[in-house]
Image 1 (cartoon, rainbow, N blue to C red):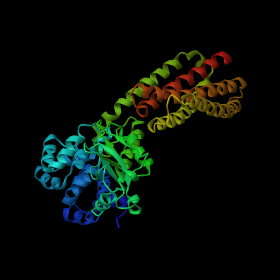
Image 2: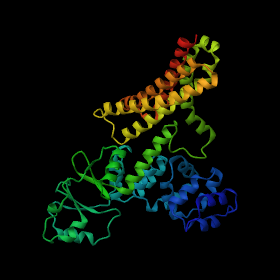
Image 3: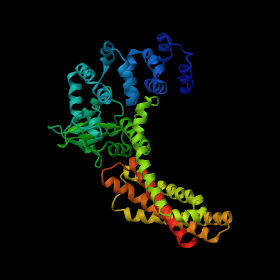
Image 4: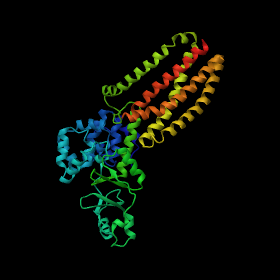
Length: 445
């Protein structure tokens, strides 16, 4: 049984495991590659390099495949050139594709020469598609028969060692074009002379090789099958996307969305160099600074009002915060809907009306609560009315912005998860400040 990861991290970091590769080898020999990869990513770079030396040689390739790009590249750079021949001894096209962006050109060439002719063909075909398209990630282990095959041929095929996640046989014509999909379980109740075409699924989904990986992965997860066939522009069967690959790809997609919302790269190393981390994060800090100055400029337009009614300055953060939270809730919902393909022009109007109603209900409730609190705090009825109206207006505006900002960014081919929150915060801050201070100028001076 694997030792809990936090305990093993503590042992390695505190040096209780020592620096002896033999001791490390003993500790890691019984662990799976996913566990080892997670352990290495969790260690400071100096300790990581020491532990890497003790990782069993036959596991090093699989460990690299399981790691994120940034921490993986550190280990690749630290590995002696003479070790790569043995590390690449069992590499296949899928492994090389996973490592492609991390390996220097010389190592890519070395790994490619290690592949057999069939794996080289798979690699060349996959690299014709960018890694954002499903054709880049197809699995070539599949059950294929001619379109005129009978049940007996299907049963004979099943007597071989079956690939993982293989619950269907794919039928192709003489040109290799996909014809039909037959579930394996249907063969056992059919007569041997029955044509497989007669048992084919009528509505089985087919993935186009140029389809976005997130969309294709969701189709696999919803299909009820262990894998779906992938075809090229000529309908030729080139492979399949199985449920394991689909789950990994969709998990990476959502991790990328979460990290992008903070302006960060999902591959960033926990212990990446300070200069690199600072450089990666500086851009969005700079963008945020510009938007903050823009909001401050709008506040400066009401300098005279703030000088005469100090209470407005005290309550300004409340208005901005309420609008920002309300907007981010709507933004998150819409970004998820866009990612899943659930938000389209057909349902946009209904979605906008619904979010306006939600914003209106929450706006009225919290505007009244904050207005009453402001009245008792400053004993000023007009101040309570001003912040009440400003909160209501800002929450409704935030709901509208939460719908339109990600949709417009998506139309412009800009990732809404990456820049939507920055734009939304700017909108809600400016609207909130202008509404609050404008109403304050009108009612309180």
